[in-house]
Length: 208
Image (cartoon, rainbow, N blue to C red; front, side, top):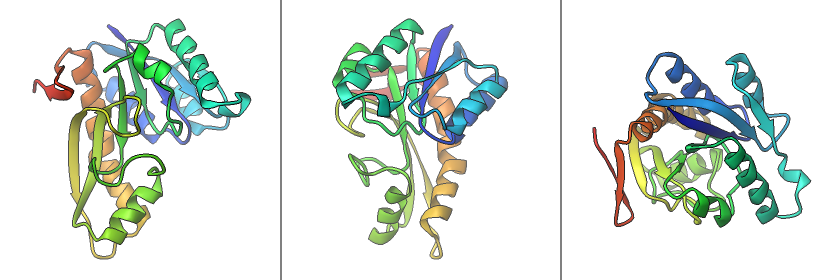
């Protein structure tokens, strides 16, 4: 049974999707053992408590720079004996000290079809604002491994939704969360825990 540690910063809707999937028995050979938050005000902490999952708050504001913060995150991950780390609305780009310690063991969900609308500065509603400004006809989300560059790790899974003529960033965000993120993230986590994701030449391959 693999230990899954989820990193959060906000409301925790993707965390809730993972919790619900685990309760339904959809995450095989894995268990969410800890939630780490970058903010003590994150509602995700309450979601974890309601599910009986221990949580740890490591506030970003308490550290002078990203490297020292990442080193503290790394210490906690090692303490928790993490096998898989899931970034579920975690708003901080981790230093390479973490990604090097856990190569192809950190999964993130990005609310667009990488390589479009991704990289530093592309998070939250900004992603959907830019997609609508560009006039794309489909958008979606990407589940990918995390490396030292923002949104540049190997792609595990992607899913799409149609963009409607009257969409706002908010309505597009909601459609992508409900139809892609909340479904594919638990699926990718289960596939990892089952040993059904392999990486060759920097690309991820899924054994469905």
